[in-house]
Length: 169
Image (cartoon, rainbow, N blue to C red; front, side):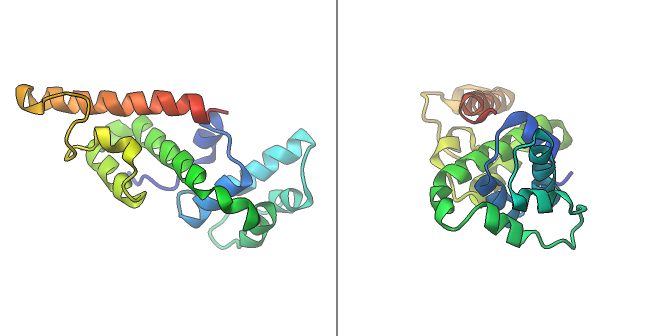
C-alpha cells in the first residue's frame, strides 16, 4: 500500500484544513487535486464560498488539472507565514492515516521512521522512533522485542490522542 495520497474523506473526518493547509499538502504531494476540489465543493454546498472556491468546485479531479492558481488565490504567500503549524498538522494527518492503515504494512514503525525523516526529524515523535533512546525511563533491554514494539505503538497512539484534541475539526 502506498501511504500517499491521503483521501479527502479521511482528512475531512479527522481535521479541519485551511486553504493554506491544503496548499501545503498539495505542494508536498501528500494529497492530489481531488482534496482541494472536494473541499471547494463542500464549501459551495454550504452557501458560504468565494469565487475561487466556486471555480475550483467545477473542476473534474484528474492528474492533468492545474489547480495551483486557485490555491494561490485561496492562500497567499503572506498567509503562508504559519508554515511550522501547517507542517505539524500534516505530520499528525500522515501519522493518523498510517495508524489507521497500520495492518497493511509489515513494519508500520519503519514507515514512521520514513515520515520522521521526510518531516525533518520532528522532536514531538522521537519517543516512538525505534532507533531513538527512550526518554520516558523505559529500559528496552529488560523487555522482549514484542513488549518494546508495543511500547512504541502505545507512544504513537498517545501522540495521536493528544494531536486529535489539537487538530480535530
